[in-house]
Image (cartoon, helix red, strand yellow):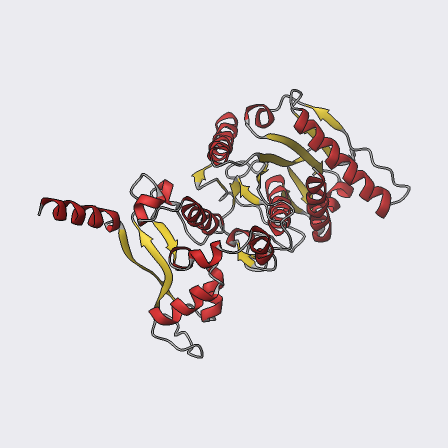
Length: 390
């Protein structure tokens, strides 16, 4: 009798953290496919389970305002591990669930990660259908992800759907930092009689760079985030002060505190990924300089003097940008530079990094480099191309 009681207790303890199915209210324009795609549940197992949970047929429509059960089980994380929370033993399966949770958090679908006090979400296909996917060879699994679309809300409504084009950067983690933000707009210039702020343009380029890296299979963290700006396809970007530091920390007014806050976020993420076996992690910081109006400057790059990896990054970015100017603006000449600097972000952050200055925000010609939308696209594309060479 005692043994039966113990066994029963263990079984109850194993599943005591399980809660209900995740429920979502349908919004205007939502369809079953749109809703599942938003939550990165595009597999057949998830599609079938959604129909079963909601007692629907494949041709049924969603009703605006009605709650629907998603093929995602919600658990109260036990503070120990995914395996003991859910009641599974497969490490790779738990890792897949962890990666999915991190992806929906970074994509803005889930507000708080399970390690930060939020619930643990377990997608049905990674619990009940896992073996089906795990039995795929590494090669076929690698190929199967190419062409899939993942959603990153931080990029804005017109850019949030990101199609995975390749896995060239799979296994790499990038920390992208746009300068200033929150209470500090950085350098402020005038264009068409309107104020233009450094932090807004640096952020837009960072988002575009991040999207391109994600398309190539990378994991990207935006260390400075704006909850509602996203990528903006307009010339003059409105200045605001609602940026936060990853994950959602208010940005301090004090410069040193602000920089330390960013370093702490980066270093915490770095240690977590290193513990999980990630060997390639890099940081890219983007700013816009402010000099006298008549001073026209090209993009230039800084690295920490004691970092050979950072130096290689800076030189590769420099040579790539120079080659683009030589190709598209023959005869113009490119006078960008690469220098070692003892900058706080480069010195204190664990991952090797590079610090990029896009131009002089006061100079009308330099302003075109970042106020013209196509130029922001081009810079992000060039930077990504350089990073893929490393």
